[in-house]
Image 1: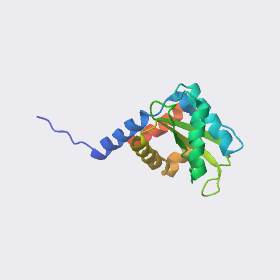
Image 2: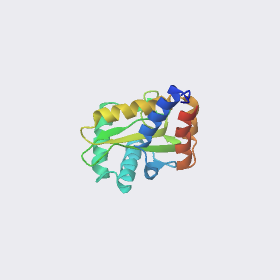
Image 3: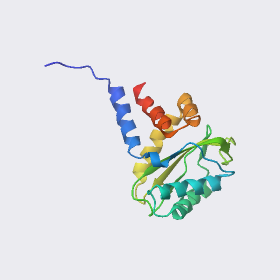
Length: 169
């Protein structure tokens, strides 16, 4: 019997990537977002999530996301925000990925504009699944080169390609 050497780190990263990809759909990736402030950008994103068929009400999803923002900003620095909302209008966890090339005033903790937004639409009761997703996305964003490349992405396939690179390094 032939034994193969298996790179366990690669397999674990591949597993992480596959788990992240189940939450992503090209219909909710936007690379050309524009808005003058946090409320406007979040309203638009929630509307996109509804239009893509992942929420039965973008307005109700926005209310859930905005309620969370009022507790504390999800603009966590490094030009990145992780807004999220738990809503009965969502059937499964979905991750919207948005690029704001000109940046948006998001009231981030570092006072820098936000260029990269990962909005999680979360069904009620999916807290553990959401926390796991947030941790995985955060680990990708902490890689400066990947984050900068995501921010400068020009199309949806480029975003997916960059995320796939994470497992191939």
